[in-house]
Image 1 (cartoon, one colour):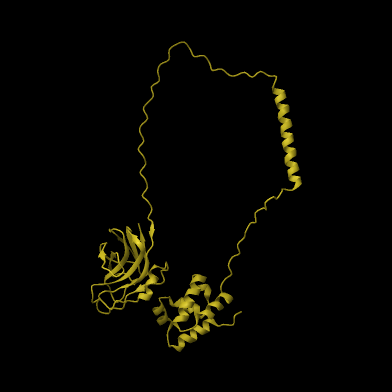
Image 2 (cartoon, helix red, strand yellow):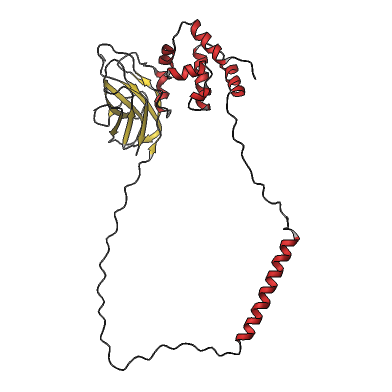
Length: 295
């Protein structure tokens, strides 16, 4: 046992800053029940050991704690052991089978050879008669008409399955504002975890500008056929934009749409490296939980 009280350290630091679990969860974009599980050291309620280590580091550093000792204590006291791998050792070069199996194989081979010679000796004196086909009758046969075989049409080829296109959310695109909009939360929109998200600022009256967006980097020019946006705040309006540079300009490559829980934008564009989920209308705040692309 390490002797480090992980949950007590987290809870004490949070209460010292007079923060509620809900407030911390809102800032970190981590569900409150997961933060509560960290403080109660109920790590079995988390999705897995990798999530436990990652969220423990994020939560500790958010509370101005040294995450190193806490993570080390988690690994020693709480992380489940890895399953052992079983390796099969091959036989060393020059390894011989035991003598008894070799003797049995040799004896069986000898008996089979002797039996074959004896069988050939018994059948060698008998003449072998080849069956002849019956003679054809002398009367003329009517020609047989063979119906033509209908030409088969090739079966239609199945449509190719969609291929995922890698895109990484790297920041916010806010050219009409202060050029920042929760940029540090952007990676949460492409981490494969629907419990985390990137969010806009809270616009209580109206957006007050042409739009704000989430910037994605494909690493190289790509041409996806559709981009899927998942959100837990449906109802805002958005359009997909694309361009060759992270600093713009970007042009619309899809039709605008009201975003539901899961919305697929059909994309018509040449290959571009940078892509934007451009939000043009929202009610207070908009979340982008996950963005994926396919071609």
